[in-house]
Image 1 (cartoon, rainbow, N blue to C red):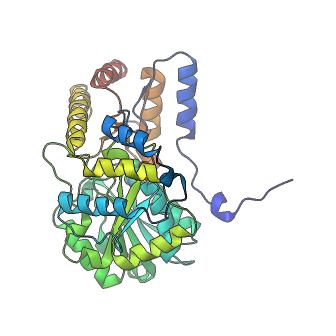
Image 2 (image 1 turned 90 degrees about the horizontal axis):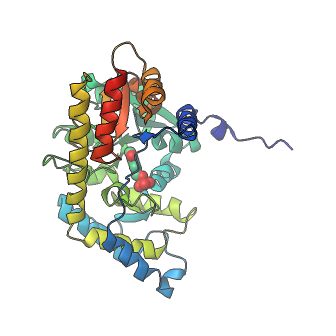
Length: 387
Ligand SMILES: *Cc1c(COP(=O)(O)O)cnc(C)c1O
């Protein structure tokens, strides 16, 4: 039998990390003590009070039945309260909040609600791959907005051609940004709101890193901007904020029309997240948030160890004020792929080549702050020896 795959699967971009994963597995099997700065997955455990709430909740028979697709009202209320406390924004738990099975799920499903064959979706590059893939699965066309050092890793809205704008229905944005670690300056979101109004575009802001901030930097919500509720929605995730990547829980808030359409699309493909997980997530959202301050402290120490170390050995490493990534130019004479291969083969360190996130990422490599400060020191020492 030959089972023919769909065009939409055949058109998927090649998984650029395959070769790197293979080399990493090979190094490990050869006994190399690999330091993995590749994946954006927190190494720290979920805070104990959240796990404890889960242990209790899992014993509640009421939670053993089908959940509601949109999420428990108590979860949506906790999410709304968290948004109010954290950003000062008011969202109605009934009509302006929906739970997600991790934000990736909502990001991938949102285009089902708005994208017809041939519609254009504006996607930042380098960027999180799911924005493009959700578009592709709906038969939409991706128009890439390059993020470069020259434009402070912000899309140049005025550079988008008029014929693209005519067909554009959605724009994805993500600040604090993965992979560049850029943050949005104060003037940017107001400009986006005006742009969205003018061109009738839904703004989808991915706020996965809103709590991963340092040095007193406070990441704004897109929805804090006057008029933003008229044009957009925001995707939140407990994955990075509370070290809960394995739990698969997040929520999306914002414009009621867009949220209603997302609920409709989602309710036809999923049946919501396990309510015990939602209850544990409520514990996280309603807590005093001291676990976030502790996380920020740990990442700040790791960041400083890595960035200072890299600078000492001659790399031009910027110090991020948000996210847990260092987005660093590769030394002269290397491509991203060449440099990452060298660092893995000669120093046993896994990093990610910038072009893996999109062509404008060429010339950079990304390191995740997901190992202890001690291991960071070791990583810098190993790099010193090979450079
Ligand atoms: C990690 C991440 C997410 C969150 O994914 P979850 O599905 O909520 O675990 C979303 N967007 C970006 C850019 C990310 O890096």
